Every structure is written in structure tokens, then in C-alpha cells.
Length: 379
View 1 (cartoon, rainbow, N blue to C red):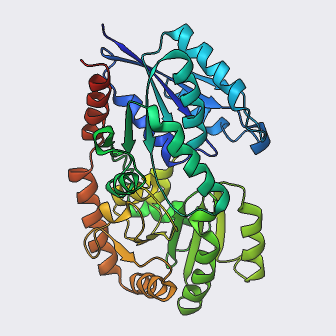
View 2 (view 1 turned 180 degrees about the vertical axis):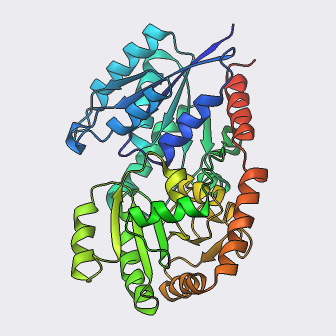
């Protein structure tokens, strides 16, 4: 086997979020002398072309992206035929899949071509009967993959519980490259005011796609109580997704339209995070969210639910605050305490920044990815 190794990444992307950013960050750092990479993603016409932001971001970074057919009918076999043509034409050595439908299509292509395959699993959780059923299918689909990688230690543990053998499993952390956008206090104040945020307002944000497991509805109900305690608070909801309109209606029904802003997708998230005072992440399930890492790199204090891989980066009282999943009173109390305590905000933000800069580097993550590919090719 000669170098470079040719790798195709396959993604079923429903929004440009953490998984997509992880893949692009890895590909940015892979040694081009040893690895040639390309990207394939599913068309999603039924989802309003939700793959477009990812494709555009990938191409801006210089990566080629091809699409394979997809629809609400889940045309797995036609998608597999298209992917098979791609990997044969490109002489792909390794197919690296991300998310359930990508795993299923990849399994068919592996059977037809004999290509080496691995997947990265991001989270196992109770997601309702339909998505739980898909998780069961996924266990079957990846049974013949050469390697199964886990996004965090919690996903690794849950993969073992689901019968994936330890010899096949490996943890590949996302890693993070701090992209801080330090601005002067004067510029920060001017930019906040231009966006409707007064100097004495405590600005909170939640960065997450609008999907059920992200628990935006519960956050709005909790924020209503926080805002009653501290009327000078304001909440930015940053993201896109199918629940946005329902959440806007809920916000209006709760009388929060003046206190909550739906900000859409930020291309310049590190710059916008600098304007925030407190970041929250109250999701029901999570791996290690890159949105959390972005806030930590910016020195923002975070309040997060203790789910999935979050406690691997948020160490309570040191790099942020953790609250038990479902404990609304604890969440409200911790956020309210930070609203009133600037010293606590600064201390937690400094601890978060140190952790990201020293202990969760992208360079280490990419070295592990490269080592995995070389092991698969027995090099």
C-alpha cells in the first residue's frame, strides 16, 4: 500500500452544526502527504436544502463535496449506488461515515466493494421510538466495519454496553482550535449596542440547532423565571432547525419577545460569543458540543446539563457549572447566581479558557485520527 491514503467522508447533515464542524476541522489538519480526503453528503430537498450551509462552508475551506440522492422516502439503495460509483472512480481506500443513514449506506457500499470502513458515533440516547429504532438499525449496519470510533468517553462506554467489542472501538475526540476574537471593551460595547444590547444588560446565549433533544422549550420556560428575577437579562438563541417556528410561537405566548432574540446561524460565532456574558447549554443529550468549546475558548462562563460527554470538558466549579438533567430549579439558581456575580463569571471563564487551550487541542485529536487510518491500512 502506497501513500497517500484516499479517504471519503460520508455525512447525512440536517444542519451545519457540531458534527460537520468536527469533520472539517479534522480534514483541515490531516497531513496532505499521507492523506487525500473528499466529502460526500446527502441531498436533502425535503428538508429545504439543509445541506447547503455545510457544502458552502466546506468549499470555502477548499474541500470538494459531492452529493448523493436522498429524500423523505429514504432511498438507501440508490444512494448506495451513487456512493459506490464515487468511491470506485476515486479508488477510495477508507470510507468514514457519520450518522445513522450514512452508516447504512456505507454498509451497503462496503458489502459491494470490500472497501475498508469506519464510523464515528457521537451519542447514544433515548430519542423516542423512531430514532431509537434507527439506533438499533445502526448497530446492525456497522457490525462489519473495521473500526468504530466514539466521540467521547461516554459514547465509548455506551457503545460497549450495546455489544460493540472493545477491540474494534476507539475514542476520537473532536479537539478544538481556539479561534478567539478578542475585542476591546469599547468595541464590544459599541457592537452590543448596535445589536440592541445595552451596556447594563446581561446577555445569555444558547448555540444549538432547533431539534427536540436540545430542549429549547424548557430553556424558554426557565428563562422566563430567570428574567422575572433579573429583568436586565436578554437571551440569544443561535441556530436553525425545524422547531424554530414553534419556538417563536412559544416565546410570543410567554411574553418574551422583547427579551429573547432568534439570531439564526452565525458564520462568525467566535466573534459573536465575545459579546455574550453567560452561555447556557441545557440539552437533553450531547457528545462534546463544539458550541461549548467555542464559549470556553472565548472565556465565557457556562451552565450546562450534566449529560453525555459534557462533564469531560465542563468540570463543575472550575471550567463551568453543571446541573443535573431535568433539575430546572438548579439550572435557574446557577444562572441567576452568575447574572448577579461578575467575579464568578470571570473566574469560570478563565478556567474554561485554560482548559481548552491546554488540554483539548485539535492537534492531538488529528494525530489520533491519522493513527487510526494508518492502522486500518496496516501502515
